[in-house]
Structures are given as C-alpha cells and as structure tokens.
Image 1 (tube, helix red, strand yellow):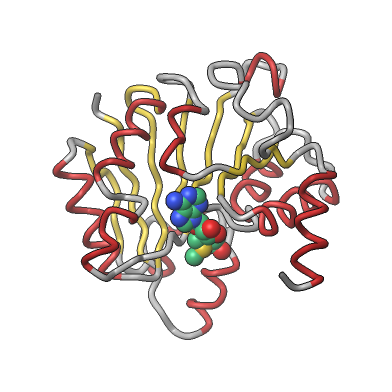
Image 2 (cartoon, rainbow, N blue to C red):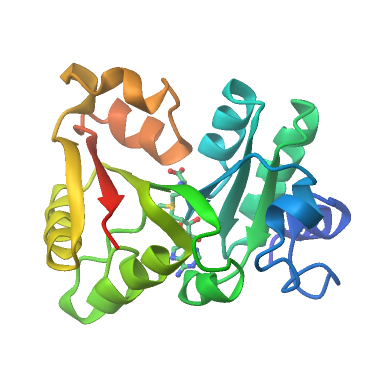
Length: 219
Ligand SMILES: C[S@@+](CC[C@H](N)C(=O)[O-])C[C@H]1O[C@@H](n2cnc3c(N)ncnc32)[C@H](O)[C@@H]1O
C-alpha cells in the first residue's frame, strides 16, 4: 500500500466520525442512530458508495437539522470525508465503513428517511450484475431500512447502468417519480442541490450527461 493510502487509513482510525471495525461503536448502532449517535430526533439520510462523501457533507451543511451517514467500503476515501466534515465543523454527518451487502445489519427496519446513491460503479459485465448497487438484492435491503414512502435518489454518468436501475426499481415495486437523462438541462436541476461529487466532476468535464432519478419506497 502507498504511504499516502496508509496515512489515510490511519486517519480513518483516528477520526471519531469514521465508524469502522474494530471500533467498539461499529455494529452497535442498528436502530439507535438518532438516539445514541446523533442524540436528536432529526431525519436520517444515507449516501451509498459515498467515496469522499460530497453529498453527505454537502447536504449536511445545507440541512443542519438532518443527520447524514456516508457509507462505503473504502477506508481511505471515508477518511477524506471525515476530515472534510471536521474542517467544515459539521456535527450532523458521519461515515460508516461496511460492505453494502450487510447494510440491513447496521440500520433497523424503517430507520432511514432518505437514500442517495451517487455514481456507483456501473459493473456492466453480465457476470457482475449481482454486484450493482441497484440489483434487486440490494434494493430489497434498502426497502427494509427505508421508511414507507421514503425517497431513493440515483445519480450516474452511465446510461446502461441507469437503464438497468430503472428496470430493477420498477420490477421491485419502487415508484419512479422523477427521471432525466440530462440533469443539467432538466426541470430537476434544483433537486440535486448543486452538489457535484468527485466522479461527477470527472465525467461532467468529459462531456457525459448526468442521469438522475428519484423513486419512492412503496412497501
Ligand atoms: C465510482 S465510486 C463513486 C464515489 C462517489 N460517490 C463519487 O461520486 O465520487 C463508487 C464507490 O462505491 C463504493 N462501493 C462499490 N461497491 C460497494 C459495496 N458493495 N459496498 C460498499 N461500497 C461500495 C466504492 O468503494 C466507491 O468508493
């Protein structure tokens, strides 16, 4: 591992806003995020595959009366999100290091108010279908932890992944209530709060359209 990456892993260990194993709090917050962690009754919003957590911190700054958890498996990226949150003096954002496959072991049924999935790896090879964050096994986990009527937002540069996700959501009884293949010229432009993630910056600069959809949990 490079020296820079090692430094970020060490930073993730030091930062109390990066929750990862084997910190004692890791695995002990299911059903208790508001009461035991944030110590308030504000809404709980997740960013899945958050990387450096641009949405987690960006929304956290815009909405001080809501709680935000950025989730990713990569500790070095989460460390950067955690450090940015400290620099921004945010107390309503935090970062959780887990595999998304076990998200429902870390959040209780109906505990979550809203979910953002920001530029997930498209994993377009057929054999990787099951690893896409909008494959039905993942959607069913999100459905369980998201309250009825709760919103799921998806942003991606990948049109094939977007189309796959639309189909997967529809087949699994989510209701798609907003959708565009070109967010920046669409009527939904204001709904992404002007926040650009690191991957979004890269693809937007290269001239890719940004796809956006919003779906509700119909359970
Ligand atoms: C393409 S990056 C996007 C990062 C960030 N959202 C952005 O837009 O800049 C996708 C992120 O999803 C994370 N990821 C992919 N599959 C995951 C999984 N099964 N569990 C947890 N994180 C995952 C990766 O570690 C990576 O940081």
